[in-house]
Image 1 (cartoon, rainbow, N blue to C red):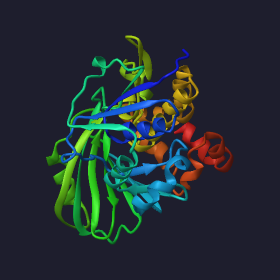
Image 2 (cartoon, rainbow, N blue to C red; image 1 turned 120 degrees about the horizontal axis):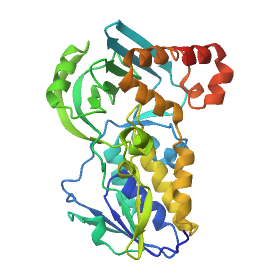
Image 3 (tube, rainbow, N blue to C red; image 1 turned 180 degrees about the vertical axis):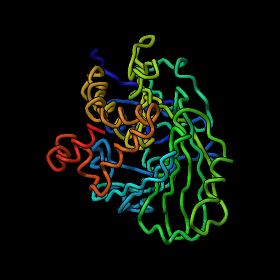
Image 4 (spheres, rainbow, N blue to C red; image 1 turned 180 degrees about the horizontal axis):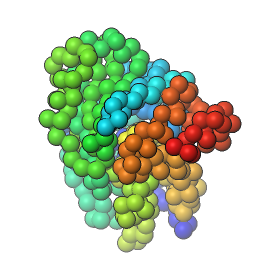
Amino acid sequence: MILVVRDVSIVGGGLSGLLTARYLDRVPGVDVRVFERRSRERYRVDCGGGFIDLRGVLGLVSDEVRSFVRCEVGSSVWRFKGDFGVRKVSVEHDDFFWIIDRVGWQEKVIDDLCDVDLVFGEEVDVESLDSDLVVDAGGARYRLGSAVYGVYKGDFSKLSNRVIFDYRQSLDGYYWVFPMEDGFANIGCGEFGGDVGEGVLDSYVGELPFEVGFKVKHGGGYFDYTYFLKDVRGRRNRLIQKKDGGWLARVGDAAGVMDPLTGEGIGGAVSTAYCLSKAVKKDSLDKYPVWVEKQNNHTVRKKMAVLRKKDYQRFVRRMGVFDGVRSSDCYSVPKFLIKHPIRSIKFLKS
């Protein structure tokens, strides 16, 4: 599949669509248009704001994102509640884990797109466009789960730069507490197997050992991680395919690259946007799925996500192996085996 692309239409003005537009705008001879269904006045972002460099894409955006960091995470606490009681796992983050201002970042990208035709308030069907390349950046195609969140004002000084992931045996997902700037935190709930109501989140907030005040913002969205769990769900989410005289590619949540274990999707947006623009620049669209696979081949997290759903107690035992480990040791299987051989054996036996 070799194709010289000169005309690109991007459907969706979220992070993946905007980054794709910016990267393609730097490719000589390529005209780019972006269609965003929300008006400029109603433009918004629904996201917990957690950016974990699980895919090694930090170098692509670190300089511009740094000014939008609300909290540089130093540690995370993973709490697991079930029939066995409560189990806590602490991980020290000596790597890249930021809570960021997504709205500010995306507004900055919009301002940078001087030579891109950015159309707000127009809902467009990807099948109706006849560009050389149509990019679906319109969000989750398959609603495999959902999340709700709220930005709360309160006293979160006990958190400092620590985040909380809170699991329940009855929930195929987790709650989170992400500290932001002084006096604010993003608190949410993600359910990988169904819809989450705001009442569930309200109950959780009431249990927290913090002085949580009023909610200043709320939102939600859907999960699509079919890229990782296509064999489990029986669904295929193709990254690129032929389309009437051209090609249709998918990026970000539309590509189903949300992390199946953590629900993190910002890295997936960066990864797919960069890989697609690289494929266009090199006139080799056939390489797009190959390059995405290299950055998103997370076999262990994929298997752990399946285990969470099938055998929660075993999932918790395996997660316990990581208690006290530095997170940078966990992103590479060979590195973890070398640094923690005994823990590796326990992980396999648990």
